[in-house]
Length: 294
Ligand SMILES: *[C@@H]1O[C@H](CO)[C@@H](O)[C@H](O)[C@H]1NC(C)=O
Ligand SMILES: *[C@@H]1O[C@H](CO)[C@@H](O)[C@H](O)[C@H]1NC(C)=O
Ligand SMILES: *[C@@H]1O[C@H](CO)[C@@H](O)[C@H](O)[C@H]1NC(C)=O
Image (tube, rainbow, N blue to C red):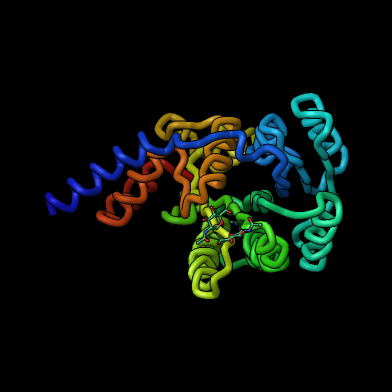
């Protein structure tokens, strides 16, 4: 047991300090799709990619927000680059193929597919009501199924460039917690699908990397509002909160070096997963203290 802990500890430290072998110039001229780019981490990723000289194709449901993000990309980036947007609703699977086609037509080829969009999370108790099942279907469609569809349509273009798929998941996709179980289920599904797909691509000799990002609490306005909605404000006192901008950068770096997984913020996310594996009952007690629903 002591040896196991020592090995975990040493790998934490190594992981923590060695991450930064990243040279932003490798993203110059690369063609990138970012989904869910109208706000939060997706918006910040678009800005980082633009600053680093990539061509950026962003999608979301809100055209007016996308236009604003494109305008900012143009200010931050190089005028020789392309900044394109496409309005799409990811609860509609038929929109996924169109999205990849439009991106390939617009950019010429695809180097990175960054899957980041989510539906607004349904928070609250699971009572098995009709409302709960509607929420579950909607969550699984947008947060999981559309990712599988988009990735599948993109494999062929990505194969031509030895490209990468970057999948944004969450601690909730490794450690289940009460009152957001549809969200958690959709994020666990991403792990099952993409961790298996990575192996299949490898077996088939397809050189497309898959980076799964396990993200902790990020202080976007949506996240904070949701936490207050379920009266779990204790979480805000306890959990370290990262900014969307820093989180976006960590994801981009991990994708660029073709990492299997990105954990951000590194130590809190790694330690939470580790405790959950070693002492799941302790983790459950902890969540019950954090979430006090009226
Ligand atoms: C489940 O449905 C009930 C009402 O039927 C609602 O109060 C609760 O918030 C719902 N939970 C979720 C997670 O949507
Ligand atoms: C993709 O990687 C292979 C090696 O796996 C290399 O031979 C090929 O030239 C690369 N193609 C591109 C477009 O970079
Ligand atoms: C896959 O492609 C990347 C990027 O072009 C390259 O660095 C790497 O060597 C390739 N891997 C294999 C196994 O060919």
